Image 1 (cartoon, rainbow, N blue to C red):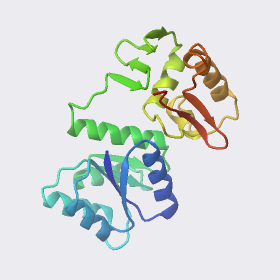
Image 2 (image 1 turned 135 degrees about the vertical axis):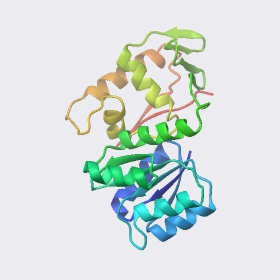
Image 3 (image 1 turned 180 degrees about the vertical axis):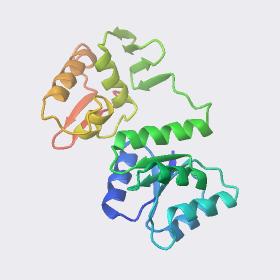
Image 4 (image 1 turned 60 degrees about the vertical axis):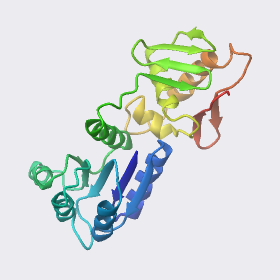
Length: 226
């Protein structure tokens, strides 16, 4: 997806941009409302993420201007103003979704993906493939080199998460949020245990040709064996 992020908080913007790029998306960033308006009116985006309070042109005014130009790109508002009345104002201004700060990156990513699917309903993954490793999301079957691999539900979810981000480094935080739905680090070795189990099933039986790698100090990466 091509995503426009309009956010003036440098730290928040860096956090979101890093996560979106690690998830395989292209991101343009504007640090104020006027710059965001110019990008939104001149380029084609799949989803626009807008901070509620922006310098030069606030988020609601920005959304109003975009909608008056008949641009129907899905818009998600990020805001520290989480009250119901504020959400209603945002939706009435023309936003499609509203996420209050602080938020987890996994929830933001999920909401962006939902907005994109609404606009492009034909986009629906039913299978994943990385090298000789394949996954059927409907039958929940996994094969490598044509051989079926039996996975437990959590192992399947972990592998699905990694395959959707193949050839990218996936951090522990991303795994905790995306697979275990923890929005904090519980200081447990649960990730290491499941990674070890998964590696024993998708790597070791296949002549030791690794696909699942540990990136020291960074996280994990699933890479094609082609």
